[in-house]
Image (tube, rainbow, N blue to C red; front, side):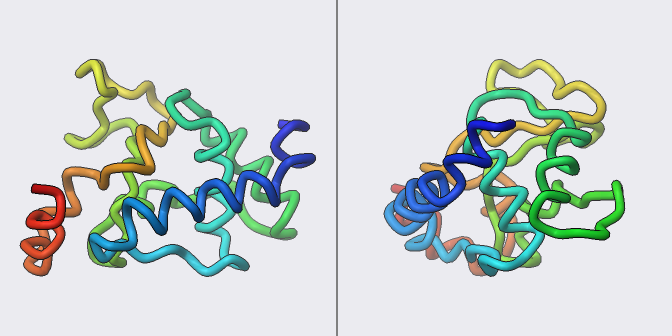
Length: 135
């Protein structure tokens, strides 16, 4: 975790670059820089493609947001209701599969990609525009 703390601003810049290039044109929104959700996303991005425990995400988030509870709602990063469509996968849901098809272990999350949205993003009505941009 020390590396990401030391390199936080660099990770933010790289993440925002990928977001601007790949996800923003599809209508996916970036959480506000000062939000807890943004901090989750930065931590997941710094560990992209790796399983990360909810406890580790909470510990990291507490470095930047004092007084938060351990009940983090990381799964909302892929929720199209918020116009978020990040390819974050977690345990216990039909969309909680690893890229190889295996299940995400309980209490873990993985950010699969910042280049493509989560498949749930295309369920919402305004997804036709996004779907056309990917074709």
